[in-house]
Image 1 (cartoon, helix red, strand yellow):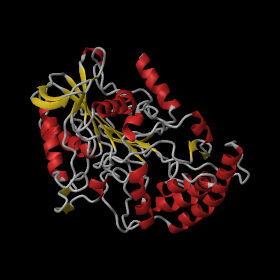
Image 2 (cartoon, helix red, strand yellow; image 1 turned 120 degrees about the vertical axis):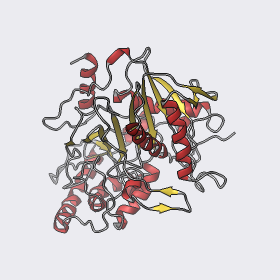
Image 3 (spheres, one colour; image 1 turned 180 degrees about the horizontal axis):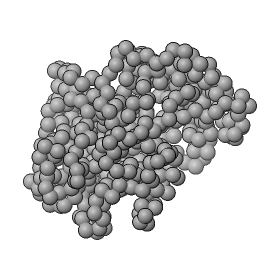
Image 4 (spheres, helix red, strand yellow; image 1 turned 180 degrees about the vertical axis):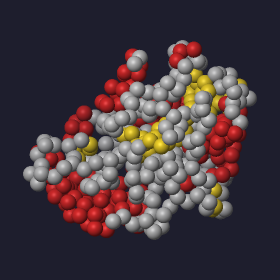
Length: 448
């Protein structure tokens, strides 16, 4: 194993990504090492076209740094070049009438315009881009042998359509890979797959299904897809009639759909050319407002999370591979007896979590309960297996807030004293919000 491969393997373990038995820890050798000149194409989220003057140079630089440091570079997909993976911000309108403005275009129109520009970039035609130091936006042709496309939120739909187009019309001789975050077309969990076939003409939204995973070998379009747990864009409930899960995921838009964020990714599964990661929620969104209360708030959230998480998870089937296209199932109901047993068990589990928090000792669990995993007491493991994998899982590393997140959110990351005061749930993860979350449709853009 090469030095880089060993580094990725060690980082996977250090990041808490539990590798199931029989799953290799060495990364997939997607690109042929050092001879390629690689370019990373960064696409923004709703209300952020990554163009000047619509976005400020400071915002674009911070966004690109976050995406590069926390996702693209750790993925290992953007390989080769000297000094490495050249960043380019690609213009996409990222409009969504009426959310982003009454004079803006509708979602489908925005996606179509963004797809046209991205396709031009990947096919060496003039396209509109913003180059470092991100002070001006202009058209130019990109000529490279290898591209990695980073897509977040709305741009995930653009990249989804681009991937399908590249399968139908390969961009020889270029190599293309994808990194998705908060992908609305995630096969299992993406909201555009949950309600596939539905159209909302007034909003101009077509629920167009799942991101494909069957790119042809020997030059596949290798893909990494990461989702925050309870992000309504990428982790929508399987049963939309589960009202508690719906309310939780609605609040999840505020807390788990950030343009920056902290968390430790856990390997969720593989499906053909794609590797999927889940970033667990330390506290369910329903309890995040309580956790923010001074004094007793964090303790209450710590104690209440286990039983409420059991109920929220009744809206999901976590045994399904994240790469399997899974539309909504309105009649899905888990085993009620198991849910009842898990709920009762979760009550003393919450008490143990509270004692561990109050004493500062994660092993102090007087009721002798076991710390629950991301899916709560009685929940299945995060890893769902590999379906026709093209190779070992593409690596991911610990995701941490970028140093410049204040530019994105208007807040400074928590200092040492604040972090030290945060309670620990289950002895492993914080039970209160440990990052400043920002909606992709929030008032983050400094308009000229």
